[in-house]
Length: 546
Image (tube, rainbow, N blue to C red; front, top):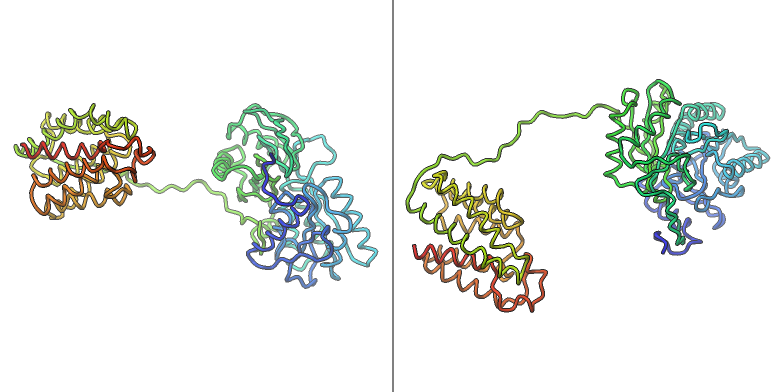
């Protein structure tokens, strides 16, 4: 099956252009209504008082070319079918529609179809008395011996520089010469690990082997100049930078990092970092991107373009535009860091003794350790079988500290905070975090002056808020909440009874609202108490018997 969203293949490009126009942020784009086969996107605010700048080519390279139409860049873009040059008639109509007395400049990528169709249209336009000049972008250095290098992502920079020159009111000859100068100071090289998917195509070409990339892959999916046996980001950046530096020489550069369409934002950010640490780092003045500027549908690849800067080019790339696709340059500078002392979130405490609290802690930890196998067996029926081990793990840590006389037993608020800290460290999964939230919040409220039952209820409220469970969701809350409410309103014995009743009630709950049990069907839950609720009930029963 084709891996491409589309409705009608014949209408694909027309439909896409409509989407581009609808989403244009400045509301300044129009489509010339001539013929369905002629797709010309033009500035809606154009008055022919300056040199017109026209570009275009096959579709599938979005945001090029329509995404660069607007004040400060292109006057019009002529969009061909997918990866196909627009017709002579389409180009001619675009020229005639937007060209005034100042003339127009055609910016053409160095592909035979584009050269022929734009060239013939230019000659025909001259017969209408229009002044037309043309520059050809040939920035691809993948094939150094090729007499006709391809025009790729650097084309967007020529659009920007020529558009700026035209916006400044320069003559046609000047705009042409400046655009040509930009072409002469551009070098691009791309790489891809997967070619693009075409609408309606069922073929999975698989030309590029796993773990390899093609260097110099064309923006229409043409095979690359060579295959590189790595997908390591640093190695690939170095592979691109070395020939680019050799071609461009020394100087200050704006570097365009162009996503060919299928690379994630995370990967593009990583590649930008690698570029910042490459052999080119001393020569980079500005970064443009990472972003798709001249893409190749969803090709899993990217390209780098170097523009050697002069004063005019520098002003040109920074000038404000009203387009959909242009990316504002960012001055290149080393990573900024701000010194900051590490936060040590540790509970500071002094060990102390309290026989009553010591006995309670010993009883609770011993009970949870003894319950390990029973709770695991219950959890095996309704969850993933580790509740007992998780609780026992936390209990063992606290029991060991008790044995070592390393607990603030006479400072209950701090004790609860410390228990919260330790459980987050030693208990696995969500249980550890939830119990840590419970004890930490309770300890803080107790420290602030709340009575113990109220503080424990505050801890429960925080646990419910972050954990997402509530009464009736078949969790330990079904035992803990009624127990703490009874403790607040009555005494510990009543609390233990409430916990027991709450735990027993979970056996009759056919559906769990939270936790691992929520993924288990009701037949497995029927008659089985929630292990967390059982743990709460057993702990309170032991405390009553103390």
